[in-house]
Image (cartoon, rainbow, N blue to C red; front, side, top):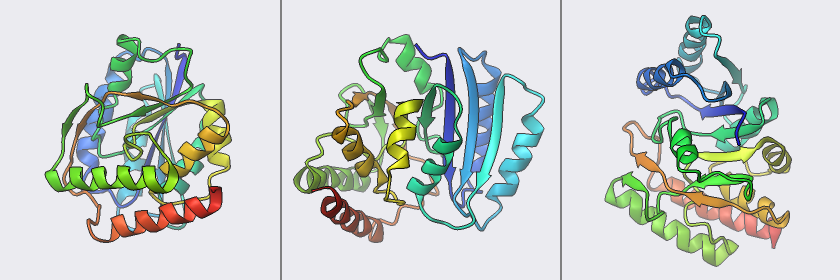
Length: 242
């Protein structure tokens, strides 16, 4: 089913979490890949040492020829949607996996999906869904409440029935990803909702799959401002598409 895979990590000021992430990536690389893989790190204008640390990691890992690693740097901090759009534009392989560099979802999750034959020819887009009945989630109570409220607002304002739009672990057929992300206008965290609407407009279905997700420390989520920005983003998207 999957013969080659581009993995895209958007990031901004992640130096505190990179050591653990590097160890996870190295373990992933050491396992014999089931298909050709490239890993693309997209720096969304970081002003800490993230770019230098990842660049050094890439240079030290080049002796392993199984997986290609590269880094792209944006001059400005524009948002996660912008970083993903940049990474997807550069992706070369047949399928594209977007995920978060904190490894709240393991890179090995893709192998679990394949082993259970959850990826098939019926769908070209797969979203990891933390609310799936088979998902295993370790998250604090307040974050879960925010997620429930957000899901209700997305249904009311945008008629989005996808249960978990914000989990970063998403798999796309390359042609689909390049098509919808080229049309993306929203540059922030709300981009996921716009992507869903862009897919819906083209009658492209989304398959929600179970995931093992664990909250990681040093999260940059602002529990006051981010929900407000998300709500404003929903209104802007509604004005654009309805």
